[in-house]
Every structure is written in C-alpha cells, then in structure tokens.
Length: 365
Image 1 (cartoon, one colour):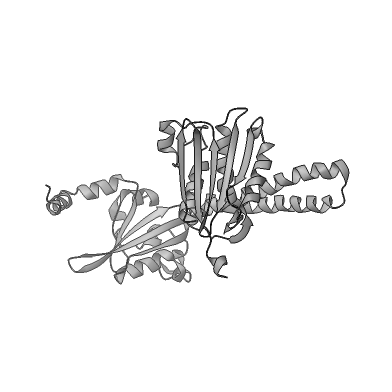
Image 2 (tube, rainbow, N blue to C red):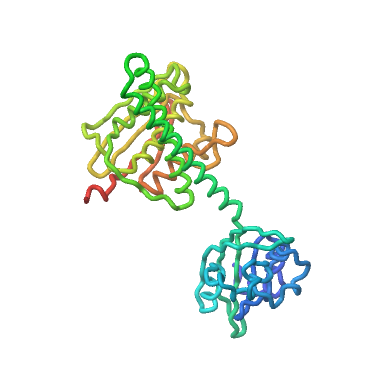
C-alpha cells in the first residue's frame, strides 16, 4: 500500500503539482498578507497578457487585472472597492476563514471597458509562519449573461402571452355560436403555453438552485384530464387514445401546481411518442393523506441501453438537443418536491411512477 504522505512530499519536491497547475485552465493566484501577488497559474498570465510571472510580482489583483476602479487609488483603495466580493473574501482568508463570493469587474483592455463576472474562492495558507491566500477565479461572464437573457426573455414572453390570453377571455364573454366554440378550443392552448413558460422558468431556477416552491390546493384529476384533452388534439396524440383514471375518491392535493403539471405533461408526451397509432396511454392518479401518486403507462417496452441512461440531462432517443423531459421530472420531483420517480418496463409496456408528499405549509395553515 502506498505511503500517501511520502508521495505527496515527493510530488511537491519534484514540482509536479506546479507543473500540473500551469498546464490547466484554472485561474489560481497566491497573495501575501498585503494582497500582493506571489504566484499565479499560467492561465492568469494569459488572461492579463503577461509573458512572465515576474511581470506581476508585488501587484495586487485589481492592478494586474486592470480593474477600472483601481485607477482611482490602487486596488482596495478606490471608493467602490468596499463592495468588491473578491476583496472581502481575501480579507476573510487573511483572518483565517475560507470564503466564496462573486465579483463584477470592469476591466480596461486596449482603451476599452469590458464587464467580467467571476466566482471567487479563497483559502488561507500558512508557509513558514507567514500568512498567504490562495485565490481561485472562475470566469462565468458568458454563463451569467446567458442566464440573464433567458430570464428576461421568459419574463417578457410570459407577459405577452398572458396579455393575449386575457384579451381572448374578455372577448369570449361577448361571443356566441361558432365563434365562441372556436375560442373555447383555442383558449386551452394559451393556458398550456403560459404553464409551459412558467415551468421552464422553474426548471432553470431549479438547475441553478434558486427555485422557490409555490404550494396551493388543486384538483389532480382535473389537471390530468386537462392534459389529456389538450394532447388528444395535439399531433402527438393523433390516432391514439389517452385514458385518465383516478384510483381514489380523494382528488385534491397540496403541492406546486406548475411543477406537477410540467412533470405529468413531460411523462405524457414521452408516452405518446413511444405509442404507435391506435395505441392507448393510461394516466392514473391517487391521493392519500401524506402523499399522492401519478402513473403514466404506454404499451411499448424500453430497451436496456435507454434504461441505463434515462435520467441523464443530455440523453434523448429523439435526436440532438433533446433529453430534458425525464431529466427535468427527476430533478424537480426529487430535489424540490422531495418525491420519488421510478419506472417499470417489459412486455406489458412501460409505466412511469411519481410519488409526491403532500405539501405541509398549507396543511398547517
């Protein structure tokens, strides 16, 4: 068995760890007690356009990163530096506390200003009785910008679709005959569209650990039947049957209605895609005092290789760019509703099951 302490010392003496660090894409900085650079990875040199490490020795982060706020009086002394997440984390690490924060930098590059976003982690380090700080930077400028654009887009389109939906409901009150019947056919699709957009907002928030649940009382049977009615008119449901059955007389549940709607809809869509023309998809629901359950059955069996990869984010049997359906069901049910998702497959077909605890907040209210 290896003596790992000895191996560690040998790697340190041979300089392999520094070599590995320099060959990686990690942005790593080591600062002394005065926040001046002692060492950094090659990725940092590339970021700031320095050819050699000695060009940066003794400089503070805001100075060699060319932070616009550092122009005023140097890194840490500007009027806005007190709000810098990186500076606060570094000071905490010098006091012996590891830290994590975000840092928004306006960088001057070739007489132009660039907005950059960093995630910052700091670790206190002691060497020969001297205090140092190891700082790791993760540039997530593009990721954060995309997230902001997604949120703005979904918010705006939800407002637009919601406004059209409201106008159509208002017009419906003055309509009669065939026109009203046509509008009654169209309105459920607007309801579905609003629910889809709301559910996508919640999925993005869930992936970023930002989701907040909205519990309410609603009829599980009505929700399942509404999904069946809409999808029986959808291209996926053409020539196929959708049967909804409630296994209990109890019908009302307490949960996040939008999330439950999204999960059931995804399972129904998957079932319809796996069902040949003339086949039938069966949706069953049941409500108990502590939990409720939903099952969605289709007549097709699932291949073994599909079963092994089913809950992975990027996996799909439907082509590139798909694969969020079952993944999102698993993420939302397990991480946020504290429920369980599982499936059974064989000659009799494939059935997905959801078991979701009843929400407690409203029960106690």
